[in-house]
Amino acid sequence: MKWFHCSARGDFSPTRGETVFRGQFSHTVDPKGRLSIPADFREVLADGFGDKLMIAPNGNALEVYPEQKWKELEDKIGELPLLDPDRRMFQHRYLSGGKAVTLDPQGRIQIPQNYRERASLVKDVEIVSMMTYFEIWDKERWTHYQRDPAAGSLDDLRARLAAKGV
Figure 1 (tube, rainbow, N blue to C red):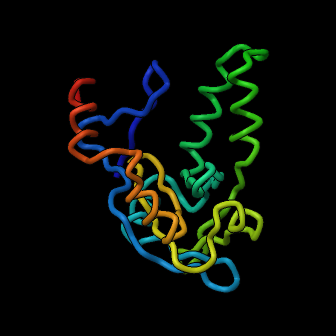
Figure 2 (figure 1 turned 90 degrees about the vertical axis):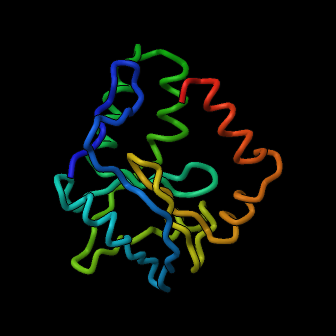
């Protein structure tokens, strides 16, 4: 399975025929902080990405990238001028929080306690595909996020995306 390539604009755009993470899965974090990665996601990882991942808190959840995709993100940020304030802020607020983890032979990752606390991960979680990476949400937090009236309806979102040419 293949992945997306980073475009000149710095975004990740699909190339026809390439495979991405897809789906949403309910899982549990065990008392030792281990989480089984869905088999569908492990298949994507096994086909060219290996067992090394990077996790980073995003404010609501944990984002999980194949190490190669994380390095591509670092490279894109590294192309900005060294003293660019947005570069520095992104490095401080996001990239510095990246933590390397490795899939064990059972297809699990170990999530450090402080990362579980930052994302409020206790036991029940939702693993949500984001095409080029995936997120790990506390199940209750995900449910509230999905029902947030401030986000508007799915029809409103589709209309906004259509106005952007999607």
